[in-house]
Amino acid sequence: MQISSRFTVALHIFTCVDTFKDEHKVTSDFLAASINTNPVIIRKILTQLKNAGLINVIRGTGGIELTRDLKDITLYDVYQAIEPLEDGDLFRFHESPNPECPVGRNIHSLLDDKLKNIQEAMESEMKKYTLNDLRTGMQELLAKEA
Image (cartoon, rainbow, N blue to C red; front, top):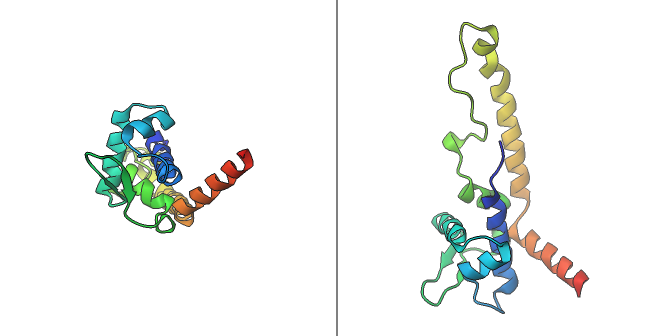
């Protein structure tokens, strides 16, 4: 199991929007250049973020605006927008363990609660960090470069 790069690309998008909002029109082409990927991929991620109510995309003149303050958007919010979970479960269980096998018959009882606890711990950690934390971190990094 691995979270796709779309999650970190989405975080990159938010950081670019915040960093460059006063200097540049932040478009999918602009973001693609920063992320070093195809603008089509950026547009797909922007659509997911828009559908989740995290951004508005301004057509024509271009640009992206946030629908909430950075301190009100957690990494978990972005994760939920980009990596929707099938049935709400992070771990996908193999379909049909053999009930005739003692391991197959008991594997769900053995793992279900543990896997749920792991998912809840990860989600809880993601809820601790906001996009404002990324802003602060970026500002600190840029100040060191100056």
